[in-house]
Image (cartoon, rainbow over the protein chains, first blue to last red):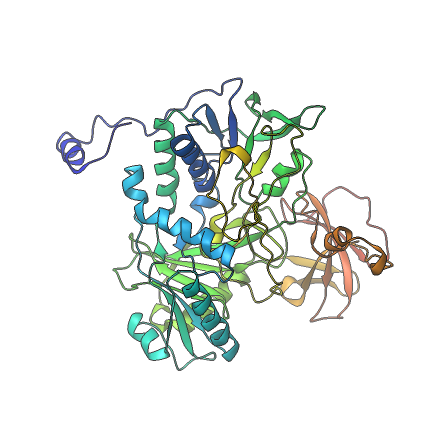
Length: 416
Length: 97
C-alpha cells in the first residue's frame, strides 16, 4: 500500500499526479477462503478490515455484486450519530462513533469525518418528552446529548425557522459528537486497508446461492464468477440481507423499503450542522462539495427497485422549505433511492444464526446492513414497537464487534 | 408515484391508498393455543419477497375498502389486483401498460 502523506501529495502534485498506484488489487477469486463476506460496502469492508487487522484472519474475500461503494454505501446521507435510546443500541453505535473519531488516522485515508453536531428537532410536546428521555438515557450511558431550547437551537443553526411554521420548533436534542463523513471514502479507505492486509476484494461477483452440506454446515457460495468454498460466511448485503440469508435457508424478520435522498446544487458553506426532524420527515446537512444533502422518509411499500415515489421527496422538500425558508429557491440536482432492511423494532439483531451444525465452524453471520442505522429517523408512520435487541451474550453490552470465534450479528435497519 | 387499480373504483394515484403489508397472513384461530414463536411469526415475520408479492392495499381516500394486489417488487409493476377473499390470480404475466 502506498501510504498517503503531505509529502507524498506534494511530490505527486509536482510531478503531474503520475505514479499513483491502484488503491486495491482486483484478484480473480480463489477456489477457497477461510471466510467470505458478501457485500462490499462500508460494513462488509469494515468487517473484512477488522477480521484481518484485529483477528489476523487474512485469507478472506469480500464479494461485491457491483463495484465498491456502489450500493447503499454510496446512497446514504452520510450522517453519523449514536444518540439511541436503548442501552444496547447506544453501546453499539457509540462504539462506532469512537471508531469514526480515529478512522482517518487508522486507515491512512481521509474519510472527512466532521463532528459538526446532529440536532434533532422537537415539534410537539410528545417529541420534547421523548427527546428529553433520550438525552437522559444517553447521558447515563456516557453518550453525549443535550437538550436545547428553541433559542439555543436557533443559535446553533441560525438558518432555522423556529416560530413561523405549522409545527413550531419546541426544542432540540443535540449530539455534538455526531456529524457527517464522506460516505464512499469510508468504503474506499476500508477496501484499501483491507487489501493491504491481504484481503481479496472481488467486484462484479454476485452471490447466487449458499451451499450447505448434509449436516447443515455452510460450505461456500455460488457466484456469477464460479463456486467459492469457505466455512464461514458473513452477510452485509444492505437491502438484500433477507434475500441472501434465504439462500442459506435462514428467515429473518426483515422488510426492505425504499428510502430516498436528494442533493441540491452546490452553494457556499451555509449550513453548519446536521438537522433532523422525525416529525415532519426531513433531514439535511451540507457536503464539503457544497451540496445540501437531504433525506426523506421511506416509501410505504416494500420494494427492491432503488427508487420511490416523487411525493415522498416532495414532502421532505416542503418540510425543508418550512424549516429553512432561504432554501426555497435552491434547485435540486438529483435524487435517488436506496433499499433499507427494516426490523420490526428498528433495532439491530445480533444473534447466532441457526446454520452450521459443527461447533466453531460454518456459521453464516450477518452484519449490520445499510448505514441507515447511523442516522435514521424513526418513522412515525409505523408504530414504534418496543425494542428487544437480541445480543449474543447475557451481558447488557454487546460484545466487541465481529469476534471470529462465534460471530453473530444480523442486521440493522435504520435510515439515513 | 404508483397508479393502482382499485377493484372497486378503477385506477387511482397512490396518494389515495394506504399500504397494508403482506396479504394472506392468517391470524391463528386460537391465539391462546399457539406457541410464542408462532405468535411472533404471525405478528412480525413477513416473506419480504423479491419478485411477485401479494399485498394488501386500502383505498382510504376513495371507497375505503381493502383489496389485495400482486406487485413485482423488483419493478413496482402491478400484475393484478383482486378482492379480499378471492385467491390470488395465477396470471404471472406483467400487465401491459
